[in-house]
Amino acid sequence: MRALVVVLAMALAGCAAMKNTREQDLVWDAYHACQAEHRIPLTVQIERVEANGTYWWRAYSSAYGTDEMNGCIKEKIAAAIRAGR
Image 1 (cartoon, rainbow, N blue to C red):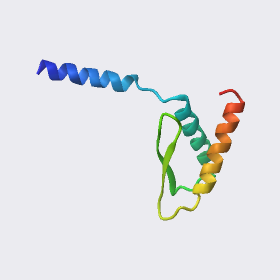
Image 2: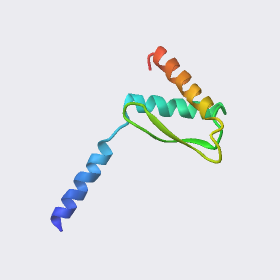
Image 3: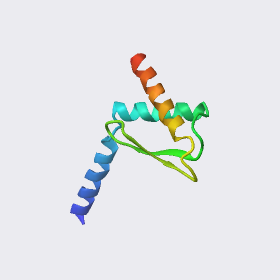
Image 4: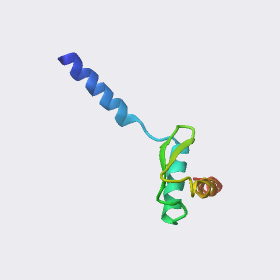
């Protein structure tokens, strides 16, 4: 029982220490900014972002808006990099 508690505590500590990479933060910030500007349809959502910034999205009912989302995210990331963020 004690070993189980130790393993569980270590697992929780490991999860708490995990942070997003800079690339992940850039993608999430860009995605949220594009959503706030209504440049992404509600039917298109990012599901996850890899450590290198590669993101996976899902489109519900149709792929309408995915090109606009990709373009907006690239635009926002480029602007953030130029601004030194």
